[in-house]
Each structure stands twice: as structure tokens, then as C-alpha cells.
Image (cartoon, rainbow, N blue to C red; front, side, top):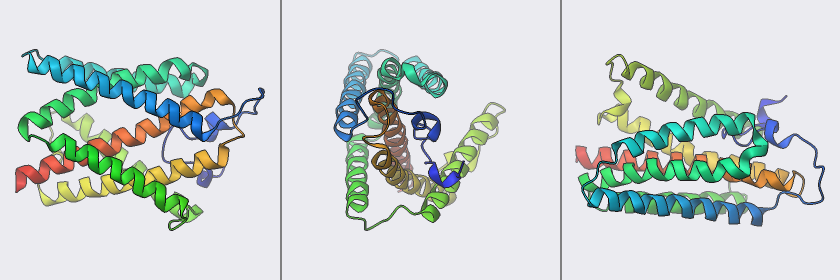
Length: 244
């Protein structure tokens, strides 16, 4: 299997889309769009609920931790049980709603309106990447795929190592507000945006070919990228607000 046929997003791999279509219906862009909007609506509704809980003086710490862990577990299950995606992706959206809702509330409490700005930047980044892809100003070549995949993999490895070291009380520089930490955040946000190009490319290459039910897998892939991008932007803006 050629690595250049893969995308940086775990949801868009030949493991998911390699199977032959045994039904008359195939994956469509409109189907992915509808399912993505539904999933985003779920995340927004849950986030609003988290906001109200916090406003009423209730602790949302465990909602955040539980949402994060649930999202990880659900993602692992989706990876090995792709035919459950139509049930698991909405559950993933709910879990991310708790996690993102809490993260957004905490950020807003420290720096009012910061989350709104992060959401705006995420939406703009999505639109810009889509336009760049559709107009072919940026062409997804094998070399570009290789660079993005290598960079994204390296970023996630750094995050994983820093997370593990955190259990031993070792604080890695990426969580601070130093210039190296800020530069790392900028690079992570840039490559999160570029990952959207690979996702668009993969969807285009598999639309009208893969089975209809795999629209849920494509939806999950976009959610993974968008959530990552939003968190990177929010984290970066928070660091800049603290530093300046």
C-alpha cells in the first residue's frame, strides 16, 4: 500500500474506503455535508448546555475529562468497527460537545470572547482551504501529502510524549507561553488547516464510489480535523493573550 494514498486523518484511509460497494447507493458530498452539519449541531447544543451548567455554579471538570476519554474510546472503536459508524459518530459528537464545551467555557472565563474569535478563525480557515482546493491554487500532490502526513504524525507524537511525561510531573515546553511553545502551536494550527486539503482530496477521489454508509466515516474524519484545528487556534490565542 502506497503511503501517498493515505491522508493524515485516521478516518480517511484505505482501510475504511477500500471495500467494494455492494449496494446501489454511494457516498456523496451532500450526504457528508448533511451529516457533518448534524454532528456540529450536536456539539454546539451540548456546549451551550455546558455553558449553562457553569453559569449555575456547577463544576464541569469531570464533563470535560469524561468527554475527552469517551471521544478517544469511541474513535478507537470506530477504527475497528467501521460498520457501527452511524451510531458511534453521533456519540463522538456528544462526547466532543462535553469536552469542547468545557474548554470553551474555561477559555471564555479567563478571556471573554476569545472562543468566539477562535470559532471564527476556524470557520475562515475551513472556507479558505476549501476555496484553495476547489480552485486548484493548491494542488494535492504526492509530495504535499508526504510533507503533511510526516508533520502531523510528528506533532501527534510530541503531544503523546508530553501527555505521558505529564503523569510523572515533567512539564514539556509546548504547554507554556514561551516563544518555542507559541511557534509549535502556530505550526500545529497550520498543519491542521492543511490536513483539510487531504480530507477534501480523499472525499473527492472516493465520492460516488464508496458505500453510502461510509459518509459517516467521512463525517467523523472532518470532525476530527475541525476539532483539532479549533483547539489549536484556541490554545494559541490564549497563549498570546497571556503573553501580551
